Length: 139
Image 1 (cartoon, rainbow, N blue to C red):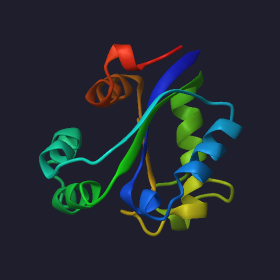
Image 2: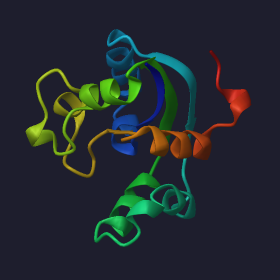
Image 3: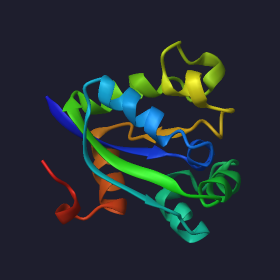
Image 4: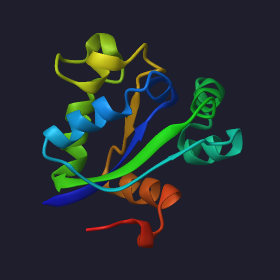
């Protein structure tokens, strides 16, 4: 089943100019980019995006980090796109990520782990709509 998912290349990776290398890994996996842009979240915008985590102890640190610099958001499409992208990203903690994954290659630590991806079709819909209008999605 063809699915779309949101991808975020986080501030640590953009700061290190890794967006091209990460996008190559994504494209080499067979996923297609159907929308993409670079932006910088305000603290309030980061809070809005991560609202599901508002009661978690890491919420303030996460939203500070996600608003600390530019990010690249994209919508990826492919066969079982959500699971495929999560596999390419690797484990949240880069110490547990498998060789050949984005996080194993580029993550600095569990928070500065270079990328975000939707975890389910329902969250993918909400997350994609947070950053993109229908007009911005091609394909």
